[in-house]
Amino acid sequence: MTQTKYIRTCSIWRALEVVGDKPILLLLESYWLGTRRFSDFQRQTSLLKSVISNRLQKLVDAGCFQKTLYSTKPERYEYRGTEKLLDLYPVALSMFYWEQKWGRVNGKILLSLIHKTCRQQTLPKPVCNGCRVEIDPRDVTWAEGPGVGLMPAVYGRRRRKTRSEKDLITPLFDEIADIIGDRWSALIIRSVFTNLNTYQDICDDTAIATNILAERLERLCTMAIVEKNNGVYKLTPKGRDIYPILIALMEWGDKWYAAPEGPPLLLTHKSCQEPLKHQMACTSCGESVVAQDIEFEFSIQQDHTHAVM
Image (cartoon, rainbow, N blue to C red; front, side, top):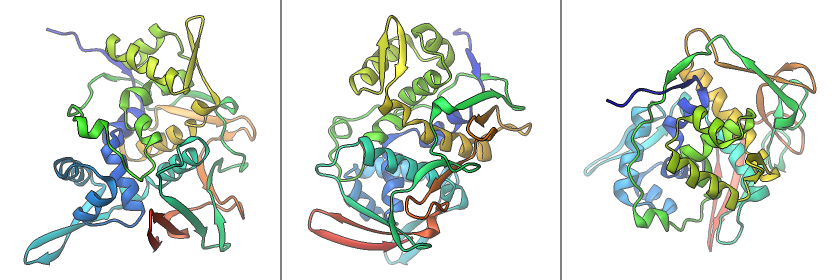
């Protein structure tokens, strides 16, 4: 019998068990752009019907979506986000911010965000809620929280990707979804952020199988997310900018999945010496942004769409 491995408790890990999957992230991105119905999800994401059906059901089971009947003949449903889903909006904005800085442009949608408070175009950026300085991992310290402990390194099963999924061409922003949607890669990056940056340290911290770990480290180096020097893995500037996404995931996991004792990790922002709390701030007026504050326009090829959150 295989001996159970234990790793440190982690709210990011728990969050990734729900959203650490590329098709789910693409469906959520499509939802933020106003999609609510199955056929529209299929058209916008280019995912297979079976994949969409499976992932939408997972989001319903996780309490992120509710199915609402909109037609009885034939019986058809649309999907509406719950409070739990709305709490993922900072994750979505953080991913969009990363894509605008580091992602591919050709073949992707053109998305323009308007902050209703100041009526200016904005690209919300991740900042510390205390001092409003943009979040940089080099300016953050961490300590164990009241919920620290050990948990079994048991990963929920993931269906093997089909060839069509590997070759997926979508107008949605999917480069960061390739990273965050691959749970192994996201957990490796999390380890490096906490200065666990040798192969053995990362292996012990994540309990990832050695063959998978070697492949993902090579992939992350190829993508210029990490670089290897004398056996030590360090994040590149492109990799460091993933940090706010992981912080947003951690805060979501802290709220919805942390132990009753509290969060397992406490972060302090060195700039203001206050507990770090992730906020997305308007780049025009500096105010915090939530889903209800944003209007957006986007175009896909010749199809121009206007939507209001």
